[in-house]
Length: 257
Ligand code: C5P
Image 1 (cartoon, rainbow, N blue to C red):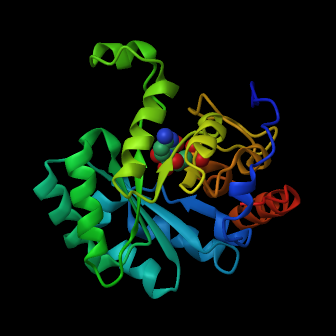
Image 2: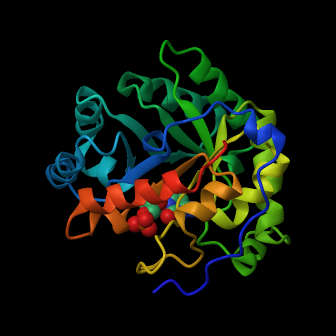
Image 3: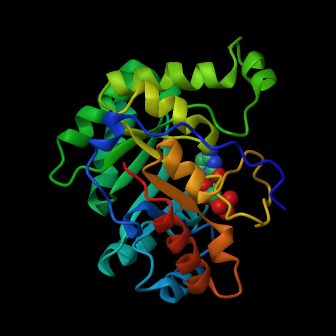
C-alpha cells in the first residue's frame, strides 16, 4: 500500500510554463527491468501502441547486450539507456561515443564523477551525429544521510542533490533523474533542466521496495517532465490497461511543463 504521499506541490513557475509542451504519451517511460530480452520484448509487444518510451537499465543491458536497444529502436520506440556512467573523463567520454551507435535518446551519467568527467561526457555527446540527451544521477534514492556521511559528505541528501545538480547543469548536462520529493526543489533551482522521476505509484498501488513514492499527478505538478514507471505496469495482470489508466490520470493532471 502507498503509505505516505507527499502534499500537493506549489504551482509551476512561469519558467516552467515556457518549456515546450509534450504529449502525455511522451512523458511516460516504462522501465524494462527484466533478466532477458525475450521477456522484455514480450512486454513491449503488450504495450505496443500505448507506450513509446522504454528504459533499459544495467540488468537488461548486461544480459542482452545491445540487441534489445537496437530492437526497440527498430520498432520506432525511444530509449532511455540507464547505464549510470562514472569513470575518468577520457573513459566516460569514450563510453558515450561508443554507445552512440545505439542512438539512445537519453543516457545517464553520475554527477559525482565531477566537473571534468561531466564536461568530457557532454563534449563527447555533442560531437555525435545523433547525440543522446544526458541525464545526471545525483544522490541515489537508496542513499540516506548516514550513508552519505560514511562516504565523507556531511550534508542532507537534498542539499547534496542540489549541489550535484547545479554542477551537472553548469557542465551542460541536459537534466537529472530525481525522486518526486526532490522535483520541486530541482525545478525551482534549475527551471530548464529535464527532470525524470522514478518512484511513481498510482494512488492505492503497492509501493514494492520504493520508499519515497508519489502519484503521477504529484510528480508532474512538482515539475517532472517525464515519469519512469516499472512494476505498476510491467507486473500488472494487463500491462496495456495499466499503462492506459496511468496515461489517463497523467492527462488529467494538466501539466504545464
Ligand atoms: O518498478 P518501479 O516503478 O519501482 O521501477 C522504477 C525504475 O526506476 C527501476 O528501473 C529503478 O531502477 C529506477 N530508478 C529508481 N530510483 C532511482 C533511479 C532509478 O527507482 N533513483
